[in-house]
Amino acid sequence: MRALCVKDRNDPLTESVAKTNIKIAQTGLKGPAQISAQAITELEMLGERRLGN
Image (cartoon, rainbow, N blue to C red):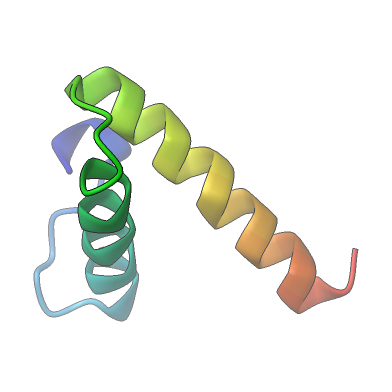
């Protein structure tokens, strides 16, 4: 979570990032750097879908 610069546990963005990290880890991906990279990719795609891009 620190690598993704999210710290406030009461922030909805932090909760979304945490849930995404957990979902990715449950797929079997292990390394924190790999999980973070995948989380960034997934969150970017989610943001693009919400913006209609």
